[in-house]
Image (cartoon, rainbow, N blue to C red; front, side):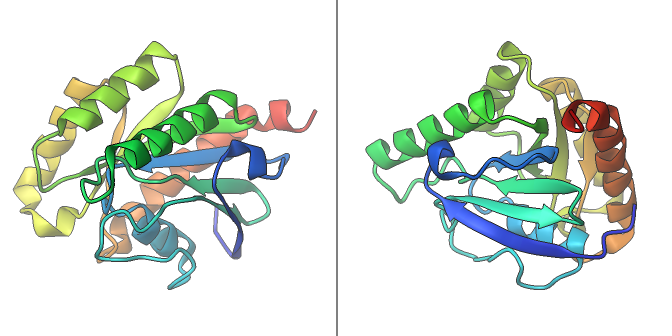
Length: 198
C-alpha cells in the first residue's frame, strides 16, 4: 500500500462528538510525548499534518485523520502526563476507555512505547486493560534512533514478551521501518474489509 493522501478531519473532546466514518480505524494510544503525532507525519509523509510538541500533554482531544480514503488514524490523548490535575487525567482516561470500547470500526489499537525507557507501570496497566477487554492491538516502539542498533532487537523482544503483543520499531529519523508497519496496517485492513463493506 502506498499512501498518497491524508487529511485532518476533526478534534473532538469525546466519542459523542466524533463523526461516524465507515472506514477501518486505528486507535493510537500511549504515554504523553511518546511520538504518536510524529509517527502519523512520517507514515503519511506530510510534515505538520499532526501537530507535534516537546511538551507532554499537547494532545488533549481525539484527533481523526483520513488516510488514502481507506482508513482512519485516531490519535488519542496521552496518558501519564503529570502536569495536569488528577481529575483531568481521570477524565482523559475515561474518554479513552469509552472510545476504545464503544467506537465502531476500530480495526486495531496501536500501543506506542518509548524505546529509551523501561516499560512504565501505566504502559503495563494499559496493556492489561487491552487484554482484559480482548481488543486487537500491536505495539510500536518509538525513538529507536536514540538507542544502539544492538539494543533495538532486545527492547522489542522484551516488550513483546511483557505486553503480549506484536512489536515494530520506529523512528521519524529513518523511514526504513515504515514499510513493515504499513504492511501490517494493510494486512489488518484486508482482514476487516468484508466487515466494513457491509
